[in-house]
Image (cartoon, rainbow, N blue to C red; front, side, top):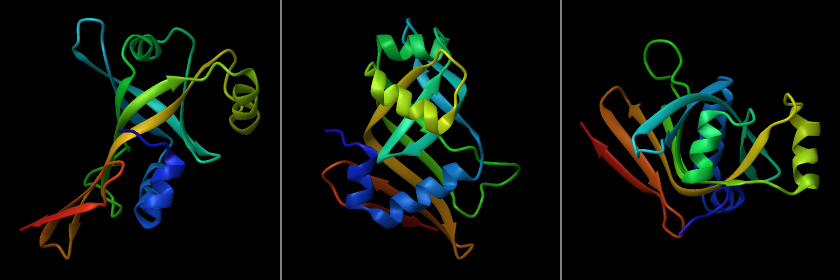
Length: 157
């Protein structure tokens, strides 16, 4: 089961806000894709939250784009910043990246973001959102959301 960003936001508005804030703290993040041989590839990437969607924009024929054309699965991790993870915690999103071929949608994105032309654009279908953080300098807290399920929160000392 998958859900777009708008569905996640509707289901868990506070959690979604924290995730967006965490991604908003830095421009560049880490995208994991699968190479042709099935091994992982990590690449830097800028992401955008616009019009109820999480968008991934890429240079034409970049290796990460070619990976996604072969296998749409991805994992995206927010930039942790320098040193320890920021107060917002560590945030990861997993799902499928679907190429946008609709010229009008792509043009609308281009007007908002002004990416270098040409570019590949992918919208995301989420399968999991995870936030890990430390609470009260005592507990490691892991929040996990999957489409159609409530957020699970795990705490341990």
